[in-house]
Length: 143
Image 1 (cartoon, rainbow, N blue to C red):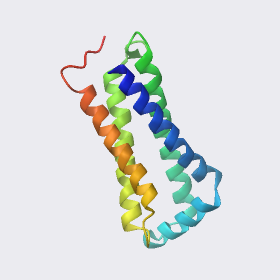
Image 2: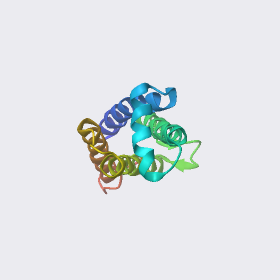
Image 3: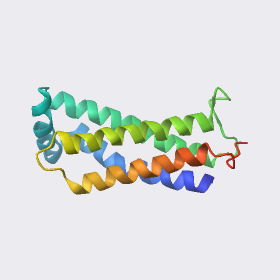
Image 4: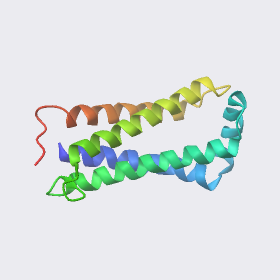
């Protein structure tokens, strides 16, 4: 189970890091997308893009921390103050909800959704849901 958590959280972190970088660095493709998506909301596209980049960066960090701590012999973070199972469930729920927001943005704010982004977001929702199920199953023993 630890191997599954390590691999899935690492892959999701790597994939999402590209999107966080594009938003925070202001890549042209990201700037154009957020100009399109900000119009229906009536908000500043730069603020929307940067805020989204910060949220995705937080998700990336939480996925990477979960992957790293899943490998440790002691499954407790920060000297037993936050149990691994709680942290990992939070990280995956945070990623899942963020990607649900991305899916809603694709379908509700874009003129034509980018299907590659829909597939990536859907895959992350699915993997995060599986991780949450694994973490909360009675067979997963935290030691």
